[in-house]
Image 1: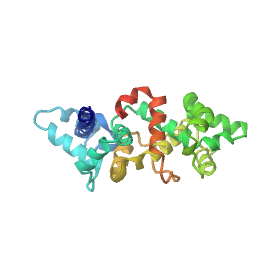
Image 2 (image 1 turned 30 degrees about the vertical axis):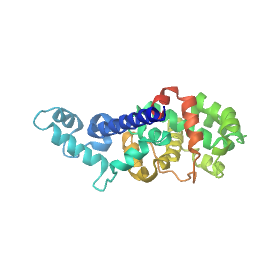
Image 3 (image 1 turned 90 degrees about the vertical axis):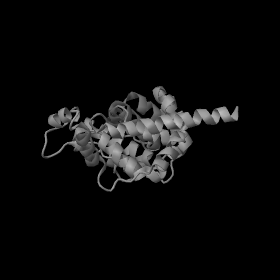
Image 4 (image 1 turned 60 degrees about the vertical axis):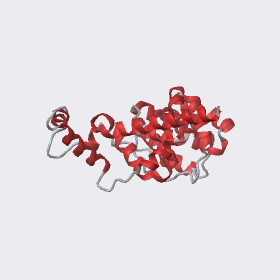
Length: 242
């Protein structure tokens, strides 16, 4: 029985490594146009050339080098180690998942981490801005679920972070993207040794107006609680996380 469980885990990890490698091999499908476009060749022409039997592989290789950068270093052993844990699989999934799903995950994590500050927001206009930015599901997480199910995720500096995410000069979509970027920034350390390179790939998978470099990060996020949150609120990712 134990050997069978290990076999299933190995197959799951192999599947994640394969999907990750496939995402890197398909830069035009996996990453935002801004991450691979060339100043010397319009994006449409690059896409057309990538389908050529003569130039396709060379064009894809150039695009991939543009995405990852010349200093990219993510050993296969690190990727395999990530694929062997639930939190690692969660972060690997961010490299190739649909942007809409990534946004949802970022908002959920931001809601859980900032829930104490959200609960203490008494100014009506600020609370409404937070509610609009998070959306109904993540706002419920911040105001009802997190205080009961994920209290350990509360960030001590949450009030200051929340204020920084709500500048008066930003409109609702900008504020929402700020919350998404902040939430994703909390997840990236779960990649362990691969965090810097994975962060680069996730940032380039997203449109350029998402910022994953915001100040304020939990020193050690409770991995089990994060996995529990995503499994509960994004059921389609249960198969990804395992």
